[in-house]
Image 1 (cartoon, one colour):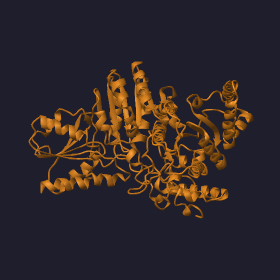
Image 2: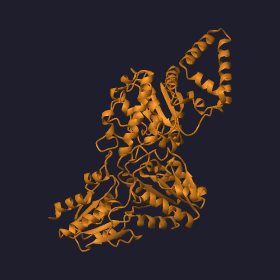
Image 3: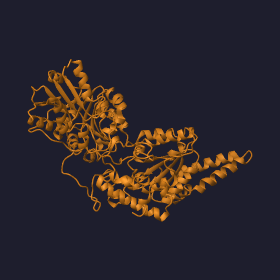
Image 4: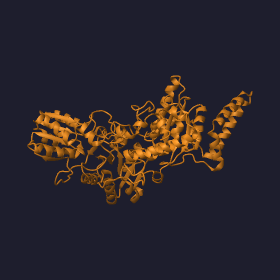
Length: 619
């Protein structure tokens, strides 16, 4: 690499010529493609913002000026320009760089990101803090058009004009046109309005007019109104200017000089500014440009032909997709809702076969739940499929709009438990704790695909007004006991029922517990293994099973506070349990990226660690 190797900080960038910057952009794209082909990650979105990232660091002075990337998954070029090239090959790996922004890595990352819609609110807060502190630094939020479907973005926009601050919002529009331009005249105006000279001349003219006695101020106001009317007719009105923003754009996201001019112009405008840029997901890599959805979040792939290295195993998400199509044929009232995760959650086929009963609401999880309440009241059976991490947004709606209203919702929680490469913002370890606080809620956690099928069928068609949760992990099923038959009962029991030792687990961890049971039997240690099928509410039959045990070991892939093992411990205490009770799970902490097998070892959930912990007390 001729140029990227020399970039240790944004200041090094500012020494390069225009031709050198063009070559640097090519080098960056090469690094992005090669690294993501090995480590996975968010490729298409990062390829789309290379020039924007360069322009931001050329015009502003990070970290004094704050660049806040919404979601954070498009920050790879930003990382390369802020001194992290030498570690970039570790991205999304254990003890390596995060796939999102992370203040633990660099002062250039203001917030740890991972969820959408947050950047503008954070930027507003920083901008106002700067004003209060007497600082003139800029606060820049970079947000994609998809994130504008999230309500928090509009709440932030609505509160952005609280003070005249150095706030700049960059709308990275790579799919839809929010303010469509009309013909060559509109393009001419857009180009003119992005030049710093335009704003300097505008300010001088306004000052001169205001100085004219008596008529000056009135003339100025009249011209402003006429200009606004003309702009509204050309741009079909403008939401952002109506909310108090200076508006620049649309701008070609690959015209580096145009981007620089727009950013420089924004610095001359008093008050908040929104810059609307047009980009293309996957820019510079033909396979990603042709299929940006496929290359949004990637696993390992062949850079020469764009083909992914895949396994033949069926994942829980894939299996869900097949089963929900069958259920759609069986139950004509079934409606499926997702929040911008059609392919990720496996519902693509359902969307094609039953388009009138499928709803992708965009990044609006709160709406999805309350919308489901309306569907339920109208006699439909809503199935909302969502990643565990994004379900966290919906707590109030689940309580107020579903449970309290006595409505039916089947909640299919994908990516429950550890999620390896995406790290702390995406770990699905909190849903058990908050879902189990909600009245009229039942939670099931299948260990195997057959169980997922069974639970879906039973819960979709039971006719009960409640929240039915089916939570399942990323990936596929693990080790299965011989002659295993799934049952729709609260618990399943394996091993020696007369043993004084009990292991309890559920979901993916149960496969490890089965292996632990078999290993302990080889060491002549008899154990009763209890599998929770319905993990909440806790079955009253459990106290009968556990009352005479001397030692109970509960292994659980969920955060400590509010988890099922904590609830069971309280349950046992109230029922005068006299034995010893051991629990193993992640505590209240944020877990960075790591392979699931390593996390299972770290938190003593793997078969090997389960055996080791039990042997400490059973020798």
